[in-house]
Image (cartoon, rainbow over all chains, first blue to last red; front, top):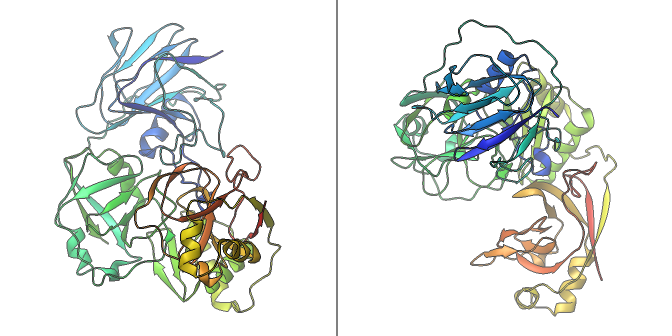
Length: 282
Length: 202
């Protein structure tokens, strides 16, 4: 069997593809890789379809051994990558021979590293996806040392890019948003969202929890539960916003002041606690 | 009823009532508009998420502008009957609050036909409308940290069944052995929006 043996993980290593959209009306979150640009790039580098499943490794720290020859690439923030102790670098396709070990270091910036493997991770899909949804507990369990992760058949050839520049997650992030649907529930919401907010350590795949000068409500009314989507900036009674990421609940009872533009979701996925974020209505 | 913006690729239909939302949802679903990724009903709203680059949002807007929502498409709603053992921890509390006896609470809950209005909270959790008014009661003042899978409860204008063990603040009437959510099943959720539901005491 073509497989990867998990030797070591960082704080949290999950199988992720592009998720399972289409089931929100049954209460199932979309899930999927948070930094979709990084997963897609990794898959292109190793010759996979962009939506093949890889490993999302929070703060890197992942070590795997190949049971058969394969091509791998590590994407996300710039991070050290070694094969049997030899530095190969991230953001490049690397050939692994059987029994060779790949070790991903810990990135200095950013949060989530992605390991793409030729053939993709081939654990059994659930509702059409191999993604682990941490809110619902759907999909493959978080990876543990000793696990054997099966690989699928190789379908393409590596993209063969000479140099891919790794993105550098900034310490200050300006995020374009579209106001609404419930911007009218807040006093001067555009100015409030445009203040600097700080990403807190309570953030996870469900959402980025922010701290800062609270947004104020026009009234104290209650909102009947309504549908949510990735990128929604929901404001609970504390006035401190939550930016929902891929494992978000499908409905919620607090008003959503604005929705992040899709092109910025990958940057938010890499925002470490302590990162400053402001939202720019456009 | 009007549309609110919801990011680049979605729009939220703000409805006057649950009935209007239900009619709008049935209308959009029956039309089978191309390019809709998610159609998520809420208690007074309908979220439409479209594939980037599709014209689904415009098509849905046009469809609902022209639709007669007082006569929505009937469709063919699925009918589900759940067998319930009415031995819930809050039966007495619910009876007292309603000013009726425990057997009358059971008769009220089993006597009504419910509709799955929307979902959320957990995969397979449906908010069911049609609750007789004596059973429309507030949530518990302090939610339980653990409600078992299959627990049947009431909260506000809704009744519902907990698909798996979770925290919860609804008043509990009983429990069912039915599986509410199984991601490997062909129909993963027992309850989908629009389904009709009855409870039978066993």
